[in-house]
Structure formats: C-alpha cells, structure tokens
Amino acid sequence: MPTNNTYKITPQTPLPSGFGPLTTARETLGGRDLSGKIAIVTGGYSGVGLETTRALAEAGATVIVPARTPEKARAAIADIPRVELEELDLMAPASIDAFAKRFLDSGRPLDMLINNAGIMAPPLVRDTRGFESQFATNHLGHYQLTGRLWSALKQSGSARVVSVSSTGIRFGGVDFDDPNFERREYDKWQAYGQSKTANALFAVGLDKRGQTHGIRAFSVHPGRIMTDLARYLSPEESAIGGIYKTTEQGAATSVWCATSPQLAGKGGVYCMDADIAEIIPDFDLQGLGQVLTGVLPWAIDANLAERLWKLSEKMTGVKFS
Image (cartoon, rainbow, N blue to C red; front, side, top):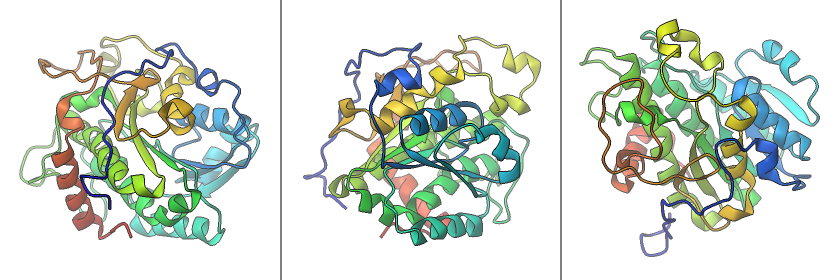
C-alpha cells in the first residue's frame, strides 16, 4: 500500500468538467471507443445500472452483468451487444467468491468495476451472518467482490472502480460500534445513510491502496431517479422534494468516472453531475426532504476510511493482497 508520502490526494473540488445534471451517459463518452475493455456492472440490468451497461457496451466494451436471478435479467439486456449475464448474490459470501473465481478463471483483466447494485430503506432484514441488509448489500458485498477481483484489476494496469453512493449520506455516517443495529433501534434511513457513507469512504480507502497499481476509485451520486430502488418507500416518501433525472442522466456520473480522460491521475473523490463535487462543510440535518448539493466531510474523511477498511476486513474476513 502506498505510504502517505507517495499517495497523491485529489482535491475534492469541481474541475469543472463542462458537464452538468442533464448530461447523459452517452454524452460523457463523447464518442470514445471502448473496444477491448472489460467492465463489470453490478445491478446492471435495471434502472441506472441498465443504462450504464448500455452506454459502455454500445461504446464497444464487454460488460459482465451479475444478477441474483439471471433469468429475470435476461430480457432487460437482450438487445444490448457484448453483455455477459452471470449469477451473484451480494448478501451471500459464497456466491461472491464463486462469481469472482469464474471471472478470474477466464484470465481476463478487469478495466472497470462499477459497484452499482443496492437496496434502499427496507424493513430490518439480516443475512446469514447477522449483518443488517443495507450495510451487507451496499457496502460489504461490494468490498468483498472488489477484494476477490483485485488481481484482475491490477492486471488491467489502468482500472477504475466506481462505487455508487447517494446524497443519502446526509442521514448519517458509519456507526463503528453498532453497524448492524444490534444495540440500537433500527432506523431504515440511518441504515441507508450508513451504507451510502460507507460506499464513499470505501472509494477513499481503495484509491489509496490501488494508486500504485494503476487502480483509481471514485464514489458517485447518480441523482434522484425513480427506479425500482424506491420499491420500499411510501407514496409520501417518494413524493418528497428534488428534481428527478432520467436513467440516462443518472448513469452519466458512473460512466464519466469509469472512462473519462479528465480524471486521469485522479481518484478517491465523490462525484455528482459528471464532475467532482464540492465539500459542504456545514449542513443542517433536518430530514428526508433536504437537497444536498455536494459531499459531507464525514463521507470523504481519510481516518474514517481507514476505520471502515479495518471493520470491513474483520466482518468479511477478506484482505486485499
């Protein structure tokens, strides 16, 4: 792992990129040819993930789309070229390991890993290990998947890992003493905020470890988009505040982070609207309806990122070689 003296920190300030909230994934590509590139997009068969898959594949990349139930995903990707459908359950460690092994056995490098799949605000559910489902699915599953694919990412020499976070970071940071709500009352929004903050902190920790291998990591807020992610929300919750994007616009920041030459030599930053987001140092936490126009300090804090890394190692038993 690079030392603090060799790791170059990318400023958490807009470039500016020239893009904005209405930019689509195809527009961020600007006609670039991704032929020969290999990408994995978790949840790449619905919503923002499907548009991410479509944009990358139509630009020439081969895209592997893992799904918990591949037969349900098959119809969604049927018209997209160069897509391989695979099986993966992010709440099942054995399934993650099996998927990663199948990919590694193919001998291919991995150029882009887009950790897109996620759940939002469900009732309390625990996996077989007793882990709360949002933390397990949104963060720990992707942490383990990235760790198992680490050698393929290094083989690329210029890989990018994109973690889909959310302005849900405003609901709170990671509770390192009780991440699974064993001693505190379960709150679906606190749990969601914890998992999305973890996605952002994971990008900070991963970029630090990957830089010397040519691996750069980013976290993204795709925007407010009405997709199946909102299936657990009440009509009242779904109707609160904000301007909605299309799924094509929602996929723009993930695709930009995964492919843009504007980000060459950069990483470890939280992005939104196809640009690096600004830091919002003071934010009055009032509730569900607030609009967050940047990233909160606790989601990009290097010390918290290291605490999360150690916790993730302990909870999953996975260490990056």
